[in-house]
Image (cartoon, rainbow, N blue to C red; front, side, top):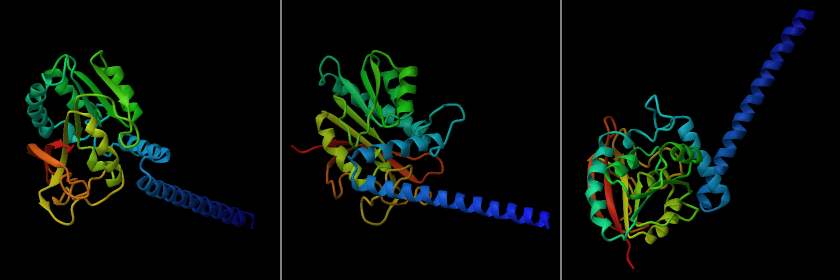
Length: 270
C-alpha cells in the first residue's frame, strides 16, 4: 500500500513538473511574441532597442549564422567567402577615389560591422584610413576593441534604428537591412543623409516573386527563401522608399545559397 502511494506520488510530481515546464515555455514564448510585436510597432522605443539587442545577442550565442569552429563571433559565410572578397576588391578603388573629396582625415562608418572580417580586409588595403565599426551587440564591440582597436580603428555600440550614428564621410551598410523590419529600415534611412557617400549591400533571390519589400521582424532570417531562390529581398528603389540607386557590384551567393548579392550606391535627393 505504502509502495503504491509512493509510486503514485512520484508520478503525480513528474506530471506536475512537466506541466509547469510546459506552462513556463508557453509563457516565455508568449513574452517573446509580445516583445517582437511591440518592437515592430515602436522601433525607436527603449523597449525595442533592448529587444533588438537581445535578439542579435542570441543569434551569435546560438550560432544561428553558423561558425568557423574557431572564432568567438561569426557573422556568417557571406562575410568570409568569395562574395566578401569580391566586395572588398570592388570597394577599394571606389573608396580610394573618394579620399581626395573627403578632406584630410576621411572616415568610413561601417554599420553592422559584426565580426569585422570584411572591415579588416578593407583597412588592411587602405592603411591610415579612419574607420568606425558599429554593432548592436556589445560583446562583439568590446571583443573587436580589444583585438583590433587602434588610433585609426574604433568600434561603437550603436543601435542604428534608435540611436544617432557616428559622423563620417563614407557609410557602408552590408547585409544589415535584410535582418530588420521595414519600420526599422525607415528609421535608419534618413540618418544616412549625413554621409557624402552611402553604399548598401543586400542579397536578392534569383527569381523575384510577390510584392516588393515584404515585411518581417528583426531576426536572423531574410525575407526570401534562399534555399529555393525565390521571393523578394530589400529593394530600396521600390515602395515604400523609392530611392535612387546606382549598381556597383553583383556577385553570386555562397555554395548552397540561391541568391545574388548586390551593392548599390544610394543617392538621396535634396
